[in-house]
Length: 372
Image (cartoon, rainbow, N blue to C red; front, side, top):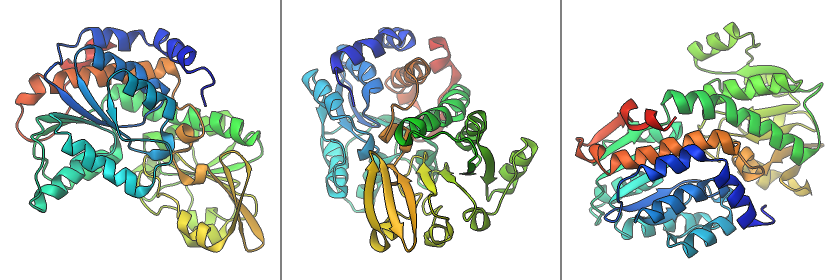
């Protein structure tokens, strides 16, 4: 994706002043072994490089194999990080990366999706040896949902629910970058198209608002009564997905849940429907059903055409997180805020946060507000 990686990295670093300042404020991290399970694209490089400069040992795994940029991983390995991640790694290799990260004996975890914490607690139940993790960070709603279903063995700090992340990244950047990626990938706009947004959390709200701004006729499918009511108050037609699937030109999933678009929905879609996912989980759409029952071609990069009976469905990025698999994700300046808060959160979990009792906590305002 990056024709001149060093120039791209220099450009990103130049436009991330908050991240630079947050890293400069970190304490000495020489005794910290930080295992990171996260997207490994260009915008992550300034943070990881900065942590290494503060003496931190780092092990890199990915929360999504389709979003890994191999040149980023190679660069960070050259700078001193350890990594087990590459683009489109197999499920087996991806699973192995979690075991390798834990065998590395990290003292702290920084995650997007709670894969390492989940594996660690599975190992505890299986009476397998586990590292002595002091504390951790979690950045995603899907990760928080997983953590709510367990009793963490150490303090974990949730920064997905911070106003600055909810209101900036979740509410604005995901939707904006998703449709920008749609335009550059398909060479089409949303004019005259019916767009059905599935899920009306903060990400879905941003996806819907951006779609309308770009000319779409937007409908919302939402099972939660409170969120459905909010969508109505925001002026969106709230539709039943089973009915709306047959009329949609574009369907966007934004739930972070599994199996949102199932085989019945796919069978009901009309010829030429585009399907994309911007949720953290790659399994929001029943891709195996398409692979097992349709013939496949790729007329454009990241546009996967599935001939299902007498119609063709266009699954973008094969159901993976579209805006970061096929595109650049958040703008650099917006992600600067996210990354600065992340750096501040790492500073917190190696100091005050490490003294907390085991459990799940919201990252305190005092830990991150100074970086804004």
